[in-house]
Image (cartoon, rainbow, N blue to C red; front, side, top):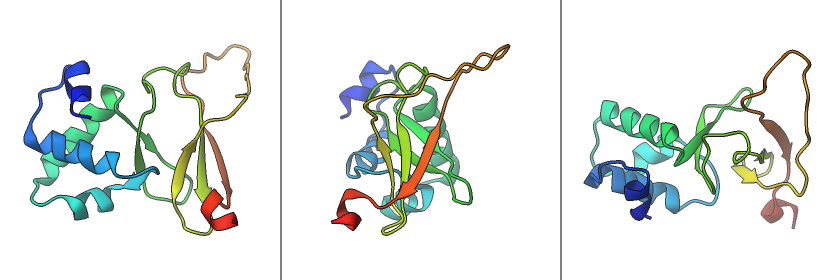
Length: 132
């Protein structure tokens, strides 16, 4: 996982490795409060800068669902372009977790006169665990 920092040309500090390690423990998006809870010691400014650089470099992406705090998830592929960041953000009503779900088919939307740079689709329901 720390090779990801080298690949993205980000300095490998112990703090960045620790934050990346937290993301790798979850298969769902997590809020900042979970990251803060899992960190041993941290400076809030350093954490915000780390999150920002991880987003800019396509390591994680931010998910802001209506009525919810921001959540962050590891990118399965590079998140910096629409072509690679096409999945559905699914919020489970049972466990309240947010998942990035790959779709078999992603809709093509054409808005005459507009250039879409990012498209987000949000869904709610029950995840695999909660619907079993």
